[in-house]
Amino acid sequence: MRKIFLAAIVMVITVSNANATIRRVGFTGIPQIAGVDYTNFYSAHQAAAAGDTIYVYPGKTLAGPEWPTSFDRAEISKKLIIISKGYWTDSTSTPKGNAALQASKGTATIGNVNSATYPLYFVPGSAGSVLMGFNGEGESVAINESNITIKRNYNLIVYLNDFTVSNLTVEGNYRVWFAGNDNQNNIYTNVIIKNNFIYQFLLPLKTYSSGVITNNTWISNGQDNRDGSGDLTMSYFYNNGVYYDRSNIDLKSGTWIFQNNLMLFYTSADSATNKNYFKIIGATNSIVSYNVALKSGTFTVWPGTATNNVFLNPSVVSTICEGFPAMGARTADDKYALKAGSPALKVNLPAGSPSDAGMYGGTSPYKLGMIPSIPTIYRISSPQGNNPTGNTIQINLSTRSNN
Image (cartoon, rainbow, N blue to C red):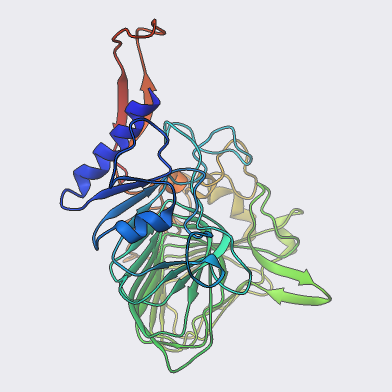
């Protein structure tokens, strides 16, 4: 049955990439196919042509000792679609994951290499590449090329390196961080940051000539670094006698459209304690509109150029999302879906608002489990039960689109 499932995965990927070769990393079924199956990502990368898709199976990493690079880092040097299975697809995980998203569980990672470098680099030649469905394990993806898409991944840092870059899209990720080298001589153009759960937003000092930051969910915690469901949030944190602030949203005087974002705060006590450390700064050249936030002692005024934004009284916090501030029976990522009648819904925002606020709004809402935007098999069954070896049995495969 497993062999049928894995073969079908290749089938559904092939449908969406008819003119490219599909390569697999970590497939353990029989038979292995020359030119399709590889034991590690480096081998698949070297064999691939521009435009190919590489499907990476759970348990495998992108970086590793196979790479003849500094600190074993993976360097993507050609246009590739690199896909794994998503995250939080197991309903028995802690915190609770989502059921019926993938027939098999687990995911691949980008790798964990020497702390002096980053495990994954998109280097010149990789324009047009997509990274989708991976567990970043809090490691960095360095952006050294234009036209890169980082989509539907878990817990990774998008590291803006000392390159001039255009058309970077960061979409539908959960717990995504932003960091990088400070260099104002570099220009970032048409940066799209949408429908993410954002953990840290420390844009490096560069020139941001244009960009859109829309429909993201931002959670601040002024009491500790957890939101009640075992998930790290934006916060102050303490290390070796120094407090660091992850909650400032510094737009670095860039030209941004900052809209339809949802900004909430959590404390383990009660909403009246006003433990919100959000501050939006560097917004002089940006359009800040149609965002929704809780009002607190430290966040009561939008930037001077802002229009049509909404501050909510902390007393209504429980009416906004399905599982915030208490997760309840919700899953690890659907807790931020908006409730019926939520004040963050479009119908409750000022007239003209383009969409609901937060990661589940807009034209490309966040997908549970960070499921890649390809068809997947979410159930395998046999109405005939177990049969003796050698018998022919009926196998039912249930599939869905995840665009």
